[in-house]
Image 1 (cartoon, one colour):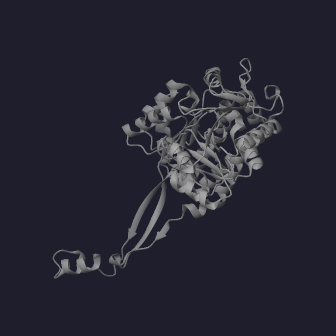
Image 2: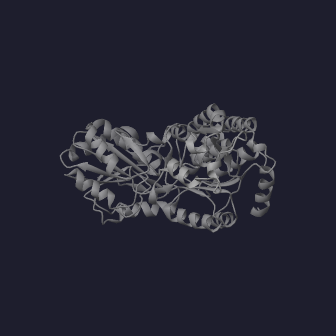
Image 3: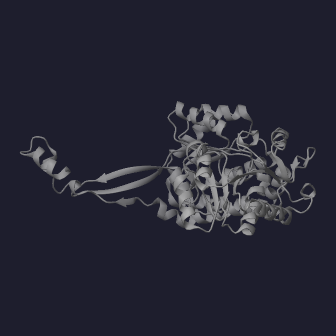
Length: 455
């Protein structure tokens, strides 16, 4: 596909002003919702083929969450679109002020492979709600899901409005070489830097949803059984291939062994005694990623798991102890079903250990002490997270989701998605019934009066 031709088609369609109409946007969201429901079985089969996702995981983390997001956007769209009235200072007497949300124009969305449907369509919902045209580039590592996505979009929207472009790295490079009005990227930090540089060449605004090593803290007063259950669920969902999964644990030394026993029990309850034989357990996406993850199994001491099946690209939920910051498993985001465990005695030293590394995308802390909860929130900069839970903040349309520093730029979900794909245009409407002479330099005592007003 010639990217420049597609881009010109979408620019021409955007200039018709159709996408700015409330009813057009609402109808587009309804069409998208109907298409997702219509293709539900195709999506379930594709996600099973690409990643061996169970029907439960595929629906709850990919399809259901998208239907919920569309419903939320449709419910609130009219209110989001209204110009937001803001106060006007006394120095502007006679005028009114408002902030208008207008679409950027033609947007590029590049999505990853770990949640290949959800992370492609979630930003698309925001782009449509905000009135943009969209070119969507799904991951080549999940070909079946990308194919279903392309079919779903092509039969629902005309190409000049929303289009899917498939391909590998060379296609992504061609897309990034074009001039877009907005770019939304979800993926790794190294590729995020490339996207940011490409956007900077054209002064294009960009949202980067990246990742990093997200810590999970288990303090000495935590409810150990519940913490273990929620951590096991959050870490090993999708075989750990989740950007906000707990990447490593910091457990207080006084409860470490009790907690590990509870964690082992929770893993067995979720995946059985032989996870490699569990047909509902997600596989690793590719041989390359499998080999990288398998190399981490040599670090520390294996407390739980550790077995692999290279032929089927499966790695057991694995817990490693006796791990140090110098080990390879602690040098990069794991993005797989391997959970290193560090221990700590003093809260301040543990928090300093986290702060000595790049800002994580997520942080989780398990403690019943409100003072410790607040201290962790105040002292560590991270994208978002939970107190006494994992991952759940991601599913709330009322909580903007995004990173900070090395873990990303910008946010989305709910109104956050609408705002991300909207330029905020500030407008002041002035009266013509009278004029304030003090603004003009030839007015007597103008400077004196201005100083009185502005001090």
